[in-house]
Length: 123
Image (cartoon, rainbow, N blue to C red; front, top):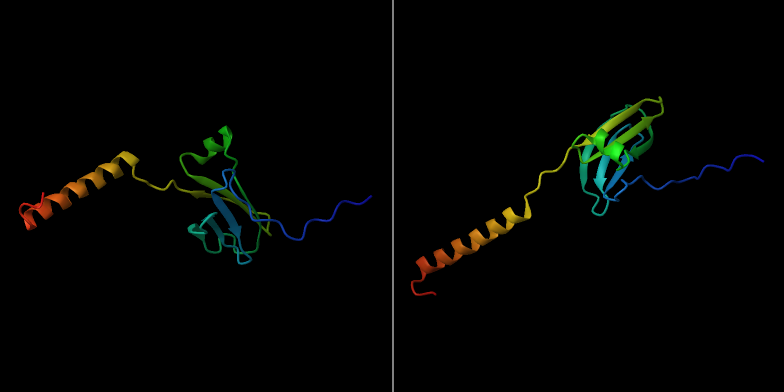
């Protein structure tokens, strides 16, 4: 019995969490997108200079987190010439929720004070 034929189309690889989508192109470019919105977070034009044949995310295991070294995701890409490259997605900066709430409260207080100045007896 012969080996089963390879599938004609494989789905694009997603990170273990399903957050990121990795893509390789026929021109050798590599990209990482947010899976649900397709917003591009990372792109290297002609990273390989030849057709990218496969991409895979580093697993989100304990060993995988060691390889990430503080980055949000890591994608391995392989091209026709059998070269493998590691692409690191730096962690995105975000505001802590408490800081965001504090800023909103400050804006509300400032708006009330401005209304009080503009319209005496407002409150």
